[in-house]
Length: 241
Image (cartoon, rainbow, N blue to C red; front, top):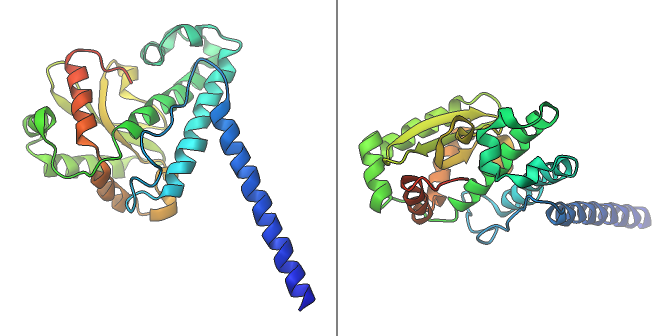
């Protein structure tokens, strides 16, 4: 009985220690200094439940997204260029980035831009869009159901890790684009209206390998009010990240 108690105590202590280590890394990741900033989530981490669980949101934002920001800030210490230009300009002109850090900027800058957008367009209650976005979806895709079918299919076809996006131009016309890894349509001179992350870390804790289920559920947390704001900015040519 004593051995059992001692073993339980040791296991418990190890778990507490592991949690403390992870928690410390989480806090440190958010605290890294430099020209690039990790904004806090614009809502509580459990806001998207039950469709996206709190732990996934915390890990995704506080560790994955934070890592992209930290990597950019580390590179900026020896490359002043990274702190002199806005992120969207760096991504739209990758050929102007020195060869030695171009891949780093592509991967981590793309990840920073994609995730900054991602948090903004969630935290809502889904449903049918209203206003200009509703009109744009009808004009470009027919209706929301048709957009969702095409969007989900494109997300399901992404091999490995990547994103599926809806882009918008200054006329308000929408288009569907998928990208591998952390690439973004910004790199092609396009404006991102909204998009969904299909890297496994975005959904694996809840959905495991069931990416199609995640893609369908994600529509329940889209914030159409924010998407409308982004569309307005796109029409003015002011939508950056």
